[in-house]
Image (tube, rainbow, N blue to C red; front, top):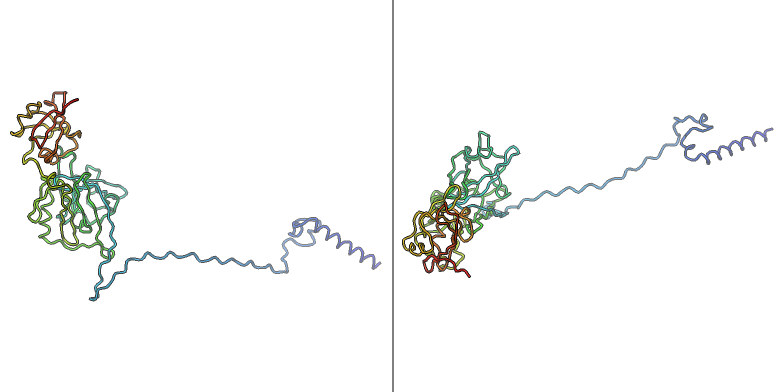
Length: 374
């Protein structure tokens, strides 16, 4: 009897083993089965679970800080300047001997683009708020968040509200300007003024540590600089020397307080002006900006008559370029000419005549002629 009970117990254990193998993980994890009532599903295991080891992540590399140039120290203990300058170039317009550049002024998410005079002799930068209203400026002050020239940020002091000099149409192809870039901005740079087409300015930043040099400009140097800026003439003088600003580049160095006038890029013989007076006096017609002749130079009147040119004639093009593109100083320069030069003019007898023809002036022979046709 005892043996029989032991056999039944062994058989029951074998059956349990077989069922656990067949039911797989579901049985082991306490899923419902024929024997689910024998072990409560929420019973805690007496064997403590092994704790998983957390992988320790390598610390992320910390970015190294940007190092500023370390200033060297002179024997006296005063830090000496460390140069970290950059340069950029910007297109410019020339009005007589004056230059202008486009300045992008940003405020409250709005950008205002306007031409500003570049005046090295002016102590403070300014803006003509009344004129800026034309560009949509509605603020009562003259403050901006950023100022850029050709995409480069420039120092932005508090702009004064002052009326700007105004160059008008038709003497110039476009009017100018809405403000002035003065010394409080310009003395951060060495600036090269180049009138050779296309006219442009080259800016090189002057730096000392992290702040630009901004020494006070001496009065005498201010007076010398003033003679270089005028939209009423393209002739200037500096330290007693006469300069033709229409084709002479120069460099203003605010650090050394010098103006360097570069030599002409062409030979003196070719660059020499052929005439003291223009071939004719003229005025721009509004709105066409064509040249209307008011009087012809006495020494060329005879040859002008032979080609049909006279007082009241209209000049439409000069060397194939519309007169719309020229300002009065450029036209006067062409009409004074250069030795060995020839210039072609497209003209009509008067403003009512539609017929036009091309004539040529030879500055070496000092006479008008019609081009020969084949």
